[in-house]
Length: 570
Image (cartoon, rainbow, N blue to C red):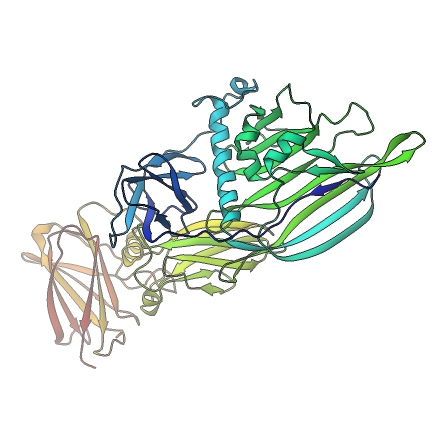
């Protein structure tokens, strides 16, 4: 008998064809307006028929196409959170982009009563513990199936085969091949064929072992012939929760049973472990099975990262067949490129993907920003939608910060940094906020949040061509009735750290006056001024010199910071 082998079909899938009427939109969190990436956006018509689906990108944006005019609605699904469905609407040509505000309602799997789901159920009822876990598994599998069907990525796969000893511990032969430009890591045989004939089928004199993919696990044929239950994480993996599945008792063909493991904290699908059942009661067969590991890509798409399956190998021994060892077939995703040809993942290096929003967290930055890796100096400019990708990184800790070239040219240090742990062959996802001038001034004034109803006022002294002018004497005067007393700090943080310039305060009848001298940046700062105050600002070449200019500023309620440019003669 020839060695048993695994049959996995890798095939190109035709690109999705769109209709004429597009719906463009963005998915954001309700309340914060923060974009949501990797959410499945599903368009239905008025009868509840699925029309189109897609994943929101790193900036939360999406595009789906309407087949016919009429009322439609959209359901947004994302792993770890409750689904959200919009009201019915009728798409109109040339309409404004659609903003879907999704309430943030996390799905809690930690602390779930696993004992309530130990009984194996076919299609468990909604609301039960097993159904809650299955729903999170379904979302990840649906995203993986969509990613494959839409041909969003191309894969470089290392396909290997190992021959093991009788106990399955020692390798005595290993072969491998590199397969490039594949549309998927693997795809299973049609599930209808597997349900009818079993997951192990004898063709001529060879036993064919089949592995399930996402579409197989999601199919009605699979769900109607298997039951589901729950299982706690194993030793050392208490933060995991398992969705157990096994064939119904009346199934007589070779079947599979196993566990889909999720991270209980994030609800993310991590791996599938399975074994072949109903093969034979002979101890010669032992327990063949396999494993499929999943990972998430920059746009939130889920893909198979690696897989393997172990099958018994037989040789004739007199009138019987004797197991002489095992054959393990497998595949490892070595590299992934997107439709633009960018390498988004490599097995030997770490990757970081993310999105930068404006200081309010509601959209992409309005000004140019740069994402920088501290210590290395490596930089990247986010795309127009704020998304960015850093690849080829070493394993370990990486510190990211967002720099504004405009603020850097003023000598203002951006205060926020985010630390990320990178792992080879994995993509870490992060959301960064471009710190605005308000953040920088709040940090200099003592940290956010600042007292309500107050305003930070920063002046920048320049020549007519925009060059900063240092060593200028600044005096600021306001009515004493406001009861405002300035903090000592007279400038925002710069590259040297805490500024050494301070305010000198005096009271002059009905008015109060603060004076200072600017550093090389030409900047001065007053913290926590009551909104509604009027300031009279004078600039001179020296404390005893005549003013070069004098201006009055009104600080209205609302804006937490006001920045003014004061132009002096060259």
